[in-house]
Image (cartoon, rainbow, N blue to C red):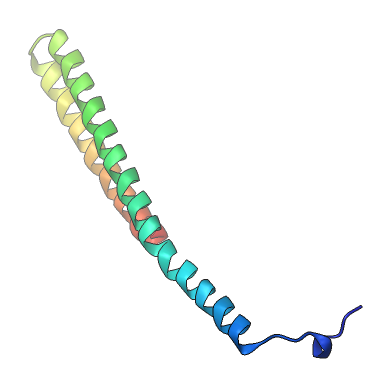
Length: 93
């Protein structure tokens, strides 16, 4: 077994190790932010695509009171979902 007192760590090696750790720590944040922005834009694109699909399906039923009621319910549900997702995002960063 090697004792810590027998290991020769030079100041240069220590500075390089600390510098590498700091660079890695600070370089990680922009990458995480970029991934977060990509996920958010993907989620928005999926939401828009789904909304277009639902709107097309509702139009195929014809315009009537049932269609307007379904659109209102869907809009309310999506607003509630958006608020819950905002709470989740704020809570989990």
